[in-house]
Image 1: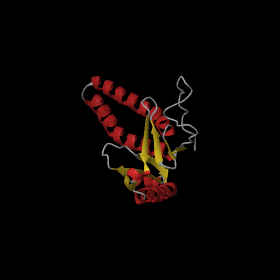
Image 2: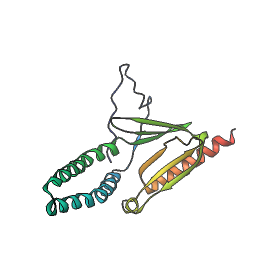
Image 3: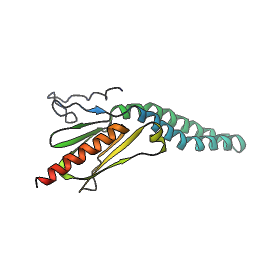
Length: 172
């Protein structure tokens, strides 16, 4: 497993996306394969369809085939970078999730604000032994999702976050 891409420091030496002395745990690199398979399943039929129509009807549709091929190359380059930029960290009072390369995003969820924690997987994720942990809070706008965790880590994190959330609620 590789470390996430290091963030660029700001002018004063600090980075708002890497709190002081915070180490983010990377997600599984199996997520790269899973996302590339989903992209291939989504883009192969239109690519083949456009190629067949270009052969049978008009050669102008080779332009669409070329555009789709460029999209496939772009996704093949982008997905590994996106996955390596994802990470999460547990602090005493809150949970942090970091995502993004060009448009970076840091979500901080206080344990006391968590209502419940979901663990999800689909057939492709199950094949690669990964799962997604999603935290639900009172705010519908919170994007607190950590995809691509090894199944054991997802289970451990679900239990740990639930335990910490319940402990914070008892103190209210």
